[in-house]
Amino acid sequence: MCGFFLLNFSLAENTDCWYFARMTYNQGDGFDNVNHVWETKESKFSNFLDPVDKQTLILTKNDLNTAMLNLKKYCCDKNIWWVDKSKCEVDKSFFNPNVMDSQYLFDHIFDVMMRRLAWLTGDKNIFENSEMREVDDKWKEWRDFIMNKAEDLSWSDVQSIIDEYQKYWVKSNPNLWYDITEEINRTFGPNNDQDFLRYVVRENGDESTNQNGKVAEALKNYDKWTLYDRYSNVCALSKYFYALLNYQNSDNSDRGVIVNRLADWRCEQLVQSQIENENKYVQVVVQKSANLFEENYIEWYMQYLYDRSVKLKSLWKNVEDRWMDVIRAVPYLLKTCVK
Image (cartoon, rainbow, N blue to C red; front, side, top):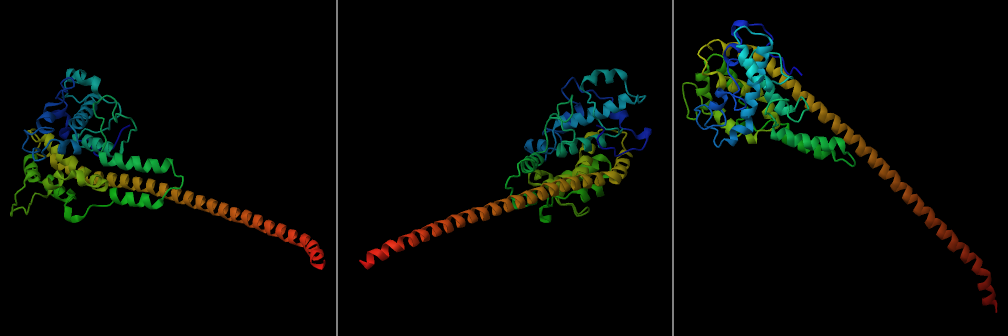
């Protein structure tokens, strides 16, 4: 599976292969740039998510390492001339066959995040050779519920599906500040990675930027995001993770601008398409549930009418039998009375 193909421009001079594909996976210990910024309290650009569980709920080191490995596989397979072939061989056993065709790390991060939210491969490990095995907790809760409804619809309650849908697929209250897409899109492209990351983590008000820590506060409350919130912010979060892994790269002055423009071109469209697909699936389940409920109700009502008819016939027969008993008894009663 190729995954999502977002950045299909051949911009060799701006490829991420030059910087990221030179790194090694360290025989399963992970990439150094991932270890320095995620699932740790040492990074100034992620330690606001404390405890570390707040980080792993959004994404894990295994997820970020998988994105790095997938980019490296692409760079190695395409024989990008500045990739050291020996470094390709070192990590080859960890490469996944079902990676997307892109020379940008942003794409592979986005791909990983969408697979967590949709489990697009259908495989238990999502990717075959990496350590990425976790799916989004909210998505799993929802999928378990809707699959049970789809597979066992006997006397299904349509209202229960609608009620559960409201919990997962409706945008959170705007006062909760969970929609950070506009904030990140506005600051990602024009700024270098470090300035962008400083904006993200800033918690104190800054009158010059009208920044009040919205992004940081939203990320701290990721556990409260609905599934719709998580889908809607995938592109924004992918930019955050891209900047987090890329900010130590001294040769990245134009990379953010390129990624921003190309990502905005397709990223949001793909997310909305996935949300629509999820909604269509729910509509099918609801319709099937409604049809079965109606069928079961009609069947029950017909059985009720049949039972009533049988009882009525039985009652009528008993009345007739008793009436005939009376008729047969009249002559004997008359003889008794005459005497």
